[in-house]
Amino acid sequence: MKFSDYQALARRTQRTDLKPGEKLAHAVCGIASEAGEIAGIFQKSMQGHVVVRSDLTKEIGDVLWMLAELCDVFGFDMDEVANENIEKLKKRYPEGFDPEKSIHREE
Image (cartoon, rainbow, N blue to C red; front, side, top):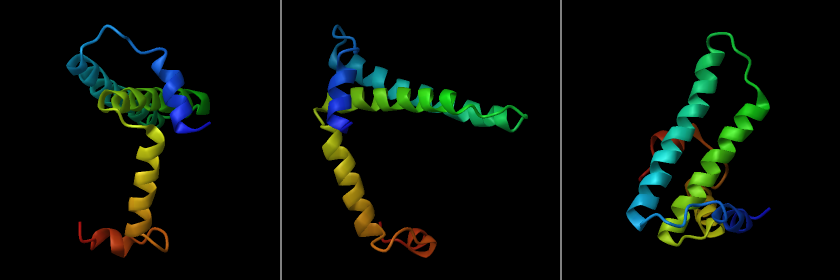
């Protein structure tokens, strides 16, 4: 599935009655909340709990949904966002990740 296809399908389940500022707050707070749920899975693993793959994929999916909503707030196409990110990484690490380039990068 393309990100833009996912974004269109996710849009069907977004609230339509929110004002732009409310939708932005919902997306940003939702990203933080869902990322916290992912962190919680791994925090529990440090207490001996097993990381259940399906629990993790569900939470990652929730983050993805919130990112789709955030992109919608600004009129971004998720395919374009993903492509821009890959191009940035190609420039930063043309031969693949390098710890030295990460530590001493110009940005």
